Each structure stands twice: as C-alpha cells, then as structure tokens.
Amino acid sequence: MTDAEPSSPSSAASADSSCAAVCSTSATAAEASPPPSSVCSTYGGPTASISSAAGRHFLGFIAALSHSVRGRKISDPVPPFSQTVTSLLSLLQALTSWIDEIPPLPHSARYGNPAYRSWLARLSTEAPALLLPLITSEELLPATDELLPYLLDSFGNASHIDYGTGHETNFATFLACLGLIREEDYPALVIRVFVAYLELMRRLQITYCLEPAGSHGVWGLDNYHFLPFIFGSAQLIDHKYMKPKSIHNQDILDNFSHEYIYLACVAFVKKVKKGVFAEHSPMLDDISAVPTWSKVNSGMLKMYKAEVLEKVPIMQHFVFGLLIKWYHFHRSVGI
View 1 (cartoon, rainbow, N blue to C red):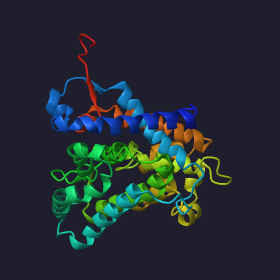
View 2 (cartoon, helix red, strand yellow; view 1 turned 90 degrees about the vertical axis):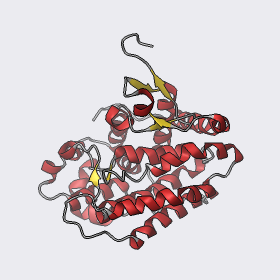
View 3 (tube, one colour; view 1 turned 90 degrees about the horizontal axis):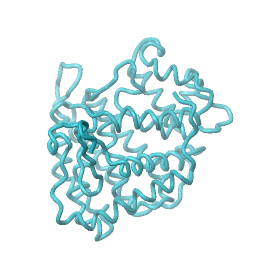
C-alpha cells in the first residue's frame, strides 16, 4: 500500500461532476452511433487505453462515492431517495428474487452450476423492461443500447459461469452513465444500492458456485470484488476505535460487519476460505498493518486503477461507445 493521501473532496466531486456531464450530454448523440463494442472485437487486441479524460472521470466517480460515505455506517440515514435510486433498488430486489425461482441443479463440480445460465438468460430477456424506469430523461433514451451491455455484464459470464472485478466495474460504469444521479444520492448509491448489489452477488456466487474470473488467487484482496474495499475503508476513516488491524478481532467482525462493508468482506473471506488468514489472504493481512484507514483508502484507489482499469485481460472485454470512449494508439509510432 502507498502512503499517498486520498483525493481531496473537491477534486473528487469535480471529477465526478465532469463524468456525469459527459455521460448525459453524450447520450443525445448516441442515436446515430453504432452499437458499443469491445476493444478486442474492434481493434483485435492491439495496445490501447481508456482516454485520459474518461479514465479520470470514472475514477473520480469512484473516489466521490467513496468520499460520500466517510464516517457513515450502513444503517445511517441518507437523504430521501431520488426516483433513480428507488428504481435501482427495485431492479436489484427483482434480480434477487429470481434466485429462489431458479434453484441450483444437481451438480458435482466445484464451480459452475448450470442453473446460473437460466438466471442470466432471464436477465437478458427482461433487462430492457427493467432498464426503462431508470431512463428518466429523453436525453438518455438514445443511450439505452449502450446502457444495456453494462447492466447485462454486471453479474457475470454465462459461458464460463464466472464473475470478477471486470463485471463489478461494469456495474459501477452503469451507475456512472445514468447521468442524472444527484450528488446528494451518492451515500445512498453506496450504502443502499451497492450494498444490495454486493448481497445479490454473494448469493449468486454461493448458490450457483460461480468461478472467480481472473482471480489473483491467494494474493488477491477477494476472489470476486474490489470496490467494497474502497468504499468500506472510506466508511472507517477516523473511526475512534477500529483500526485496520481490527480485522483480526473476531468479536469486531461478528458485531460490526453488518455496519461496515470492509469488515463484511473480511468476514465473508474468512467464511469461504479455510485455514490461517495470513496464508489464504496475505494481501489483506499485509494491509491490516497500515496505520490508518485513510492510507488504506488512498492505496486501494491506486490499486484499483493499476490492477483493474489498466489490466488488458480485464478491460479487453469491456464495451466502449459514446458514453465511455476508448482512445486507441499504436505503440510503435506513439499516436
């Protein structure tokens, strides 16, 4: 972890405002645009990168969400929900209810229950109708074709029956590209919407035995997720009693994991991984030695940029269009 200080509130909010503006204004031009496509299908996999503006705006959105929950517990009150937040929660509630309606099939392998494909097939069929309540502006109507792939790719892959940080990033991108989310909604986006998304994904992972996609294995934070560690460390900044090393206190995990996302993630890791924590999760163990949550949070943001947003094996499957643009260059000529 680095010792760099986290982004200032003003810079994070400024970057996020730019992101919202780019997403909402770009939507008006989407009507005549071709369908969004992945880097791999468009460029055949050459060296490329997210344009510096798009990268800054998206990371600024994540930083602004993170800053919005500093010192907040999951149960803390939030401003009244906008229609967008209400619709997002209804969407996630509907998806969660499908798990009970589509039980896992008898399956002997460690990973990959085929019933998951039925769950995703239902999502593919019903996604346009689920998305409609979120299109609260005529400006966003032409962007539906771009928003749909981000939503559909937020819950894993049907072919491999897996899920990873790339799918999680699709969900965050989906939120960013809705465009009309108000800044006062940010706390609710994290401790209501994202928490509901995380709970849904945990159920999918356990019920259908999803394989970790692109997992770093023993050296990763979590076999599936990254963003909860960013948001969760922000919640604990300046906490009077709990420090990064507190994750080793089982009483703290038992009593406070329902209030703090970071602690819930550690508790989940301990539940699904057996053995000595320092052996099956050495990175989380090392991070627990960092003196402050502020340094953990700033380090997590930098790690997310380097280990997710800048990793070709993850981003080559990400789709780009007018809402999120891809800047292509050729290494040999440096264009």
